[in-house]
Length: 231
Image 1 (cartoon, rainbow, N blue to C red):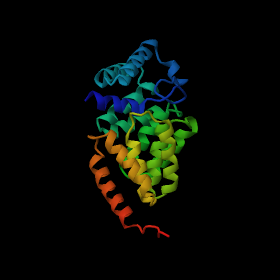
Image 2 (cartoon, rainbow, N blue to C red; image 1 turned 90 degrees about the vertical axis):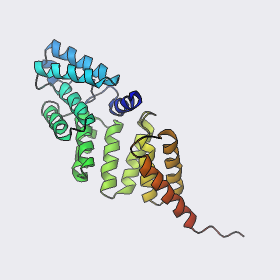
Image 3 (tube, helix red, strand yellow; image 1 turned 45 degrees about the vertical axis):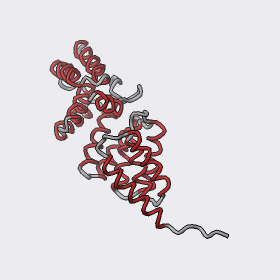
Image 4 (cartoon, helix red, strand yellow; image 1 turned 180 degrees about the horizontal axis):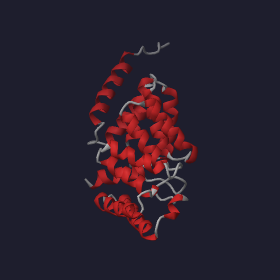
């Protein structure tokens, strides 16, 4: 359980900069010091994987300042973790009304939209976020997923390559995604390599069964490819 919690936190933590959970928007500077203190505690607990405590402090911050974009974006993440998709989307949208550069909000909305197969809207959300946070790997991840859903596999592959360069080692799902898009592109050797690596580092994740099936298909396709003639 602790490992899964740490993985969730690592997938959402962003480097310091505009729009990440630790960034203070200009609008947030109006929040009372007590609300800012609660948000700081909530962020610390979130990054430590202590989500119940994070939720309590975020709620306290919003009691004091209901339009606190930083607290709303964190609340959205906590709701997303519980799979409460509609309330999470509403929290992200509320935050964006007061901080249009909140990259966490764009990531969260794109994640929800991708899950609902609304790929064009997910692409739009991710692209909006990248305008203010061009190096945030989570946005490239969601953009890649949206592009894959739209059938643009080359563009999806390029976005996943950016994720591979920037995401922390704990985010092992990228190997499954690269394997998936490589298989779609007919790059079976690369797909096999990535899927085998994924299955080595993630033995219990939700994508394991799918990865196993895809790996078997990739290996079968490779076996059916004609071998080069020997002189």
